[in-house]
Amino acid sequence: MSRQSVEFSIAAAERLNETLNAFLEIDREGALTRAREIEESGNAGALAGIPIAVKDNICVRGMQASCGSKILGDYQPPYNATVIERLTNAGAVVIGKTNCDEFAMGSSNENSAFGPVRNPWDTTRVSGGSSGGSATAVAAGIVPVALGSDTGGSVRQPASLCGVIGLKPTYGRNSRYGLVAFASSLDQVGVFGRKVEDVARILGVIAGRDPRDATTADAPVPDYSASLTGDLKGARLGFPRTLFGEGLDEEVKKSVESVVDVYRDLGAEIVDVELPHARYAIAVYYIIATAEASSNLARFDGVRYGFRAEDTPELRLMYRRTREEGFGAEVKRRIMLGTYVLSAGYYDAYYRKAQQVRTLIKNDFLNAFERCDALITPTTPTPAFEIGEKADDPLAMYLNDIYTVTANLAGVPGISVPCGLSSERLPIGFQLVGPYWSEPTLFKLAHGYEQARPFTERPPISAS
Amino acid sequence: MPINQSDIEKVANLAHLELAEEELKTFGSQITEIINYVEQLNELDTTNVEPALGGLTAEGEKTESSRRDEIAGSLGQKIALAEAPDPSSGHFRVPKVL
Image (tube, rainbow over all chains, first blue to last red; front, side, top):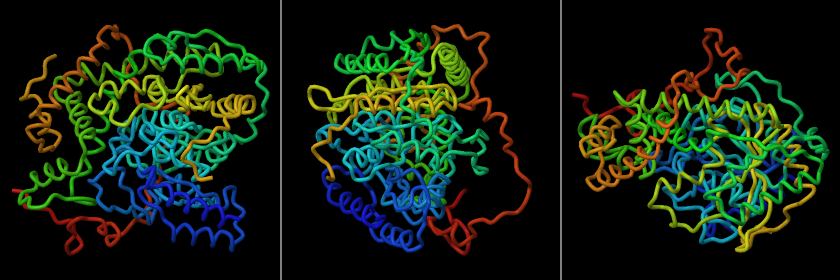
């Protein structure tokens, strides 16, 4: 059984990759060997024989971890990320590494050094990013579940654009050990799936304290599947009306408003809430994320791993050329921006100011959650846009994350759920954001909607 | 705040990036645009607001993150050097420093 599903996933990945460019590595031999071992050992783990795809910035021993960058060359990490260790112990089989924006910096996957991922609903359009390969692999039916990372929306945004479920857990819910760091105070490993139940199962396996990541919290891991009760009576859903205004595509707006109606019909109470500082979130995010990135990416210097520029007779020149040749434009732009906001004389004006406004954004959420169990918003302002459409305008690209970055800044969990197709047959998603550790509530609400309005459409590029 | 060519060169130097002439120019105007955008934060009075420290939750802050000072297994020299671009006699070799 497990061998069949792993074989199916590998064959589908190989067949569709020319069209979708979702995988950077497909480990046919290794995955089949592991599937056979699991079958023969009678492993009855919670995920025995389940094929999964993993974003290429999460370390899997024996596979590459390029992070979508040239600077890592053919780097193969000598260890597993903790989330991978937990998944494989439960019997899951990693079939390959998925394409992503370089070092998870981007919202369209166009920043990958290995070319953009294509959206299975329309291959002229972006998959979203940065975890576009994982979103696409799940949307096209190659794998039932996949891992990504979410720093400002990099799981939820591509999930929305590809018509699948995408979860960013509470900060500290699962380990970042073995996730190549972009912005450490925002990064969190997230999960893609086609069913809420599958996402809940995966989180149950990867969640929990890890001594190797001091930011993981010693908070109990509940039985997430038990929260899928279907009973939404009395749930209070916060509706931040001001976020449904300027810049939001009319079809997306209507679609998400109709989701609110569905929840009302299911017995939820809809409460008006305000997030007065949400409009500052992109500005705060691009200061904090770039500052942390400029520091985290200092480790790529051509000494210990990956690529080194040739003909560099002096050390500093070697650093500078290696980084110039190894990093792509968006990564360099963000390192520059982050270095600038942290540089002498500017720290208080930018970084400290941003951290203060981050407190205000966090307080907005805490205030809102006094009146509701979760908030509902669109996940993205528009459905998937054309490849190349926003490539020359970094600021326009950053505004894609307007609905998702706030959850990372506050550290709260969020989930994107598909809620229909646009007139151009492109997926639309809505987002639920809850208080710290409210994953059970998010699963219950997402599952309730899924039961009432199952998203059964399949993309034209699909494994089955 | 206007950002001129020499600011951009200074930042590239701090970041150890040997930017091409063309990049210095585009990054200059793009970073100026982004900085102008983020300056909207100055509309907000944050005089008595504590800066956030990461995304940590109350539970996360309470979690004991120290460990006993004990020797544990490590990768070892061979594995640690396996991915280096220029390993030599058990070391990472680099071009001359001075």
